[in-house]
Image (cartoon, rainbow, N blue to C red; front, side, top):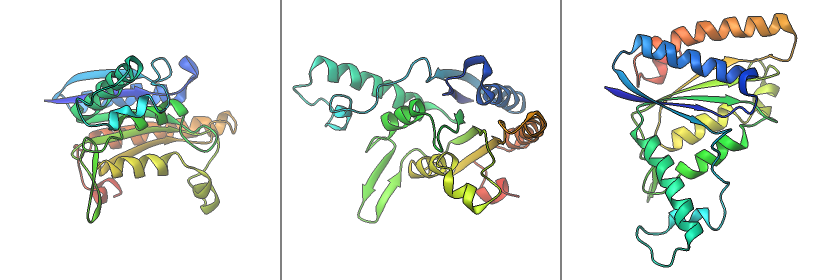
Length: 218
């Protein structure tokens, strides 16, 4: 049995392509992986954790630290719920549209809450080590322009590259992308992008969880 966490971060509601893709990915994953018995949903555009502050950063203090004020306790409870939900999940499907060359600030706020020393990563004398391995992360990447086909485009995007880096930092090596780009470049380009994304959904959801990256790239 496995647990799937479905996360959306687009602010566009029913007009969001990334939301459309995550719903399709979840349905396809469940169809091809019947052992997925539990699906949780998190809409970061609706339930957005506050950005890190001196109050919300108190989760970095030792467990049971004395002297926390009411705001710090409340913020700690939010962080604990989010990191516990992440760690309990075997598969994550994340909608990540490209906003101004990066991910939505709502998604970044969630990542900042789960990036916790001793929970999702640790530092050693040989450098950082991820503690949250063994998961599969499928990211629905939606982009108005085309960034994947040129060096200049790759240099401009800090969405897919960032997400692969941060989940890798947490120890997750099985990070997959379902990409729809060029969505703002006319109806013909958009239709082709969505058709390509449908093919990617079929491919990425039929591969067993935690396959090596060499298999995913084949």
